[in-house]
Length: 378
Ligand SMILES: [Zn+2]
Image 1 (cartoon, rainbow, N blue to C red):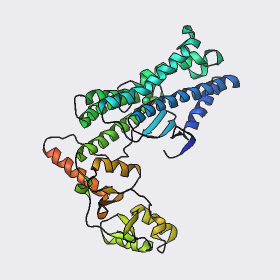
Image 2 (image 1 turned 60 degrees about the vertical axis):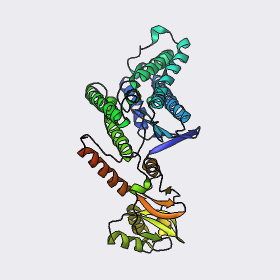
Image 3 (image 1 turned 30 degrees about the vertical axis):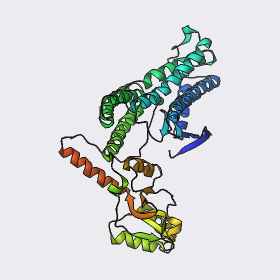
Image 4 (image 1 turned 180 degrees about the vertical axis):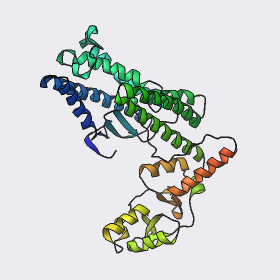
């Protein structure tokens, strides 16, 4: 995520904190000052919040480790003021696997609560009604309470929150994945509107969480639908065979010329007859403004090795292109270059498939080309 500070890399997963997190700490200090707290009490409040977010990181690692069991990598875990975000490379498509990955987070919070239990006097739990009221004497009981609340809150069926993913997985045992997603997302969006309304009166964080859920649900309906539309089609079905290429040693002006001459926006860059990289419209414009028309294509291009065989499934190739932010990829038949897979063409291909399905009676299709990112908010 942009505007994030890296805290460290644990088990190959980048842990970062978003800059807006500073606002949360600032807010905690502010409400303490307003309540007339001592400096010591203010520090206890801040420590308490940091410990909560430590638990949130462990919660996200719960998801990440469960996903790892199924061969799914986690790119990063980001801390936001409203919770944690684990960017998994994908979500398992098998309902049982998604179920396990989704519950693994809340289970971690229950485990933390179980570990804290021996150090907690039952009379002290759920006692601090405000973060200002936390001090040395009630820190652990309140941390226990928070972990119980985190587990319960996350299990609300508000897709794409954990409980919503559990719901989709359960629906997935009976329905196709994109139908299960649509039902879970509708329920999630209804709950998110409830969060937003409640938040307006009681807690501004609920408003942000509500908005996050609403947008997240929409994006996942889109990407699940897109992958469903790609079904069993191969790269060969969607690739373009007629396309212009750019020469590695040529100046940017030749790319500008191609951009102006036709409809193509993304190009393969060739060196000695082989693709050496890709260049898209934004890169051409950027290079033109920074280096002028004599700038080198070789220096402006995206050097990526991502290429596919023509019999690769489209639903496998597309997420890889999204992850690598690569808008065009060379396609091979053996070692022969036979075409190019262009993001714009994939979009058109899916729209055509969608229109075909719509004409057969499905009127609820939504296509959204957001990054294919699995999100979990605590
Ligand atoms: Zn979670």
